[in-house]
Length: 225
Image 1: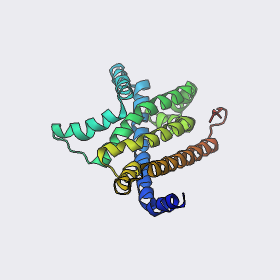
Image 2: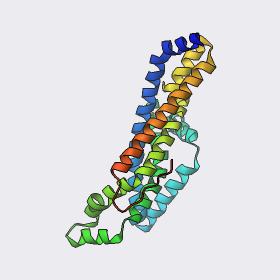
Image 3: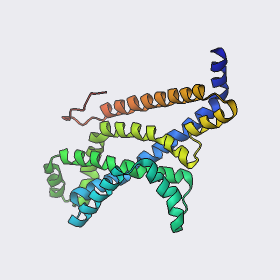
Image 4: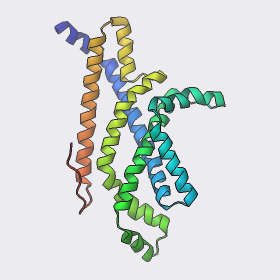
């Protein structure tokens, strides 16, 4: 037992380096998903009819494909079309675009929950529809979306080990590299599981606290864990 603990501590710097890559991958992917998801949500609600249809298809396709297939299409498939994307950026694109399809649903629901009178109020004081969306509706929608965003962040974090398939040295890949030379898979995989578990709960409660701080008055945020 003592030997296993010492072995883990000896290799902890490599595992933590991989964990940092996993967090970076998650943060960049979720930010990409937020930007694209907001755009998709707005276009789905207020765009022309054909644009609404395209956004619906976008969500339908990305939610219907396994994330590993999306990653492989971007990293291994695009080069056959003459588009070479580095592994890390491919992973961010794959995870981020997949997340955007789910975040779009979250933001669309939040926007629809804001009374239409607020849009009318913005228009009545001389703001056009774009400025009303940007300065009145979107800030509230983001705040209302924080509970759903929290869940989505943790989902992307748990999907990040799939970047291992592209050769990215995130936590699982670093663990695998250690196993190749040490032949102690149970100890390393258990340690990786514990690290992911701790990261999950750290970010989950961090964003839950942020959601409580920025809760919109009059809106009852779900307290379910």
